[in-house]
Length: 530
Ligand code: KIV
Ligand code: ZN
Image (tube, rainbow, N blue to C red; front, side):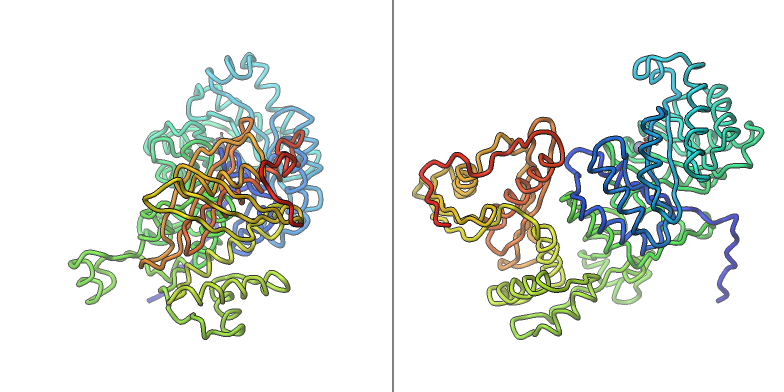
């Protein structure tokens, strides 16, 4: 079989906005370190442009974009800015250290957005397009302009704005389907129309940015590519505003698997897709739906007898791509209580983790403890353990121990020991059930106003000795964070998840306005043993 020659005209640039549009969605906040880790993986994976954040939004966003700009090896580092000069100056400042930088500036162009959101006349918006792109070009030669709500924009006005943006120096023109309203034929016709009607359209690369409100983000993006767009804006696991953005892994694999109809190529190393999905799920605590295309845990699982029979005869009967193509390895059982440090490090590397120093030591100790309690330690167990190790390394509040009395004769009672900023505390509480008793201990030792919005449990692997993975979402003052905890004991996993969410909230509070959580100041019936 001959390998088709890849022509530059068919190259689709991957613009990842996990750290901007993805991080913007409720509950997906990442810490500074988590953002750096995600950016490093995106860079290694071959993402062309990393939209690292919205620098004017907060000091934290500025710092993350700035540090990613400093560290990125190959990817272009991009910062988002509205059309105002302060936004653009802040974005320009943030991406300054990058080897290759981009400013992405946008303004709404649809009648509904201009009238109600911006309260501006179209002519004022038109002038701002020119001014914003011109200002951004003062910082970098690589400027992207987006017409927010592009798919609901009046066509003549859209073409005028695109022409003006290119004339002012925009090198990429993005036509977002901001509200996820378009259908593929319509979106493809829109891209084609703009490219044909705008006289200077050949001087810019066209880009697609589709939201998934009607479940068509990837289909629309690919339709846009077929109409001549050569940049897809997407996120790992499809996270993003509301129903999310086009999923990077789906767009990339669709082009790889359906070369007959989509003869385009990207620079993405697809074998890293699963790793990227797991990392983003871990740092955002947004679980990946089991049946999610490409990266869901069932994407390559065959349960029914008929399917298993077909698979055993020939994998292509029910698989259109090989699990290894996207980095899925068969779950192995080789790790157990007899495995040594060397085997553990080897396994970590196989799973894509590079731990060192104390983090490695701690992870190894926790692995041994798990192997003592659990007959088979699966790859998923190790991933859950290490993800938690990474996530909790800088936590102010740590779980030391928990014991719970539960059963048919209530009330259930929990005794918990925490380490809060290096001080040990103990609390004993009753509750309406063991989880309630456990959470009451936390509330007594760490008084807070956050509301529990989600409590979800699932088993990491099969069997009654499987680790429980608990997801908790806490909301406080309009901000929400989600976090996970894993342990063979569901109650310990619950406590870990709740504490992880509280730790994330304290980080956010410290980064944002006044500290909202007062840790350990008011303790009822608690004994200070530190
Ligand atoms: O969805 C959208 O329109 C956006 C813009 C900022 C590009 O995210
Ligand atoms: Zn968006």
